[in-house]
Image (tube, rainbow, N blue to C red; front, side):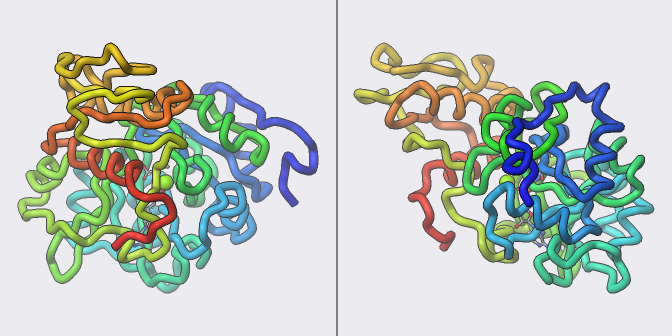
Length: 330
Ligand code: TXA
Ligand code: MG
């Protein structure tokens, strides 16, 4: 039974400081709730309840074999779910709560439902900041939460974007304002004492390397470890043209840094960060793509983004937005 098909209602939207009890009651009842995190909005359900996890997949229209991140309130909860090696623990202590996801061996006695891990013997864990952390602590159980968007669409960084996309499929959107980081968490995995980068994200790779004291090994993306992800993830409706140095007929422009491209032709124009600040650019990425998508432009031309710091994650998301639709990753 889908909540709003049955009631015919739109999701309730509640400010985060008034939403805790309502969110708890829905989660206890096995429902799903959209919540703010520091990265993007998450579509959360009780990770120990198979029916709740099933509702997450149903609302997103996501292929079932793509595993979800289990969100925890503290390290003790995390250690009941997964076995930590010393390097993973060091990273958790340094970056949690925050935009870091660790893939770890699943404990055989963990209460996580198998649908969360898609039957893998590993589990992705993250401790979110703010409302999510508080909610999980009160619930006393981990929350499975993918980004709160329909499968293949841009991740939502505002409650309004969540409601526009999923409002008729879920009972509650918790409004915590615009998410500060704006990109999903970085995903890493320790394997054979090497630190592998599975997905660039909200913490720059060099910051993780500095804390870990070892290099991050690239080329192991989560899509390969966790089959089912499509190249054209994070796709807006319009086509996306990368590394643009001009604006063509009918295009909108997403620029970065001080204006260098003649935008006189542009159907619409937004700048990720006029100051050329990659953190600001990350925070604006999904909402700007969405706004330009709504401008009616056939194509969004995107200025080059430097590949340092958070630029690596921004370029990863842009490459997916520009990829041919519905193509599996190579
Ligand atoms: O910031 C974030 O990470 C957001 C917020 C809501 O926490 N969540 C998020 O979840 O981005 P989602 O489901 O959109 O992405 C989860 C990623 C997927 O690429 C999935 O393949 C990978 O995590 N993943 C999950 N479990 C895994 C595992 N056991 N091994 C490898 N990759 C895994
Ligand atoms: Mg996602």
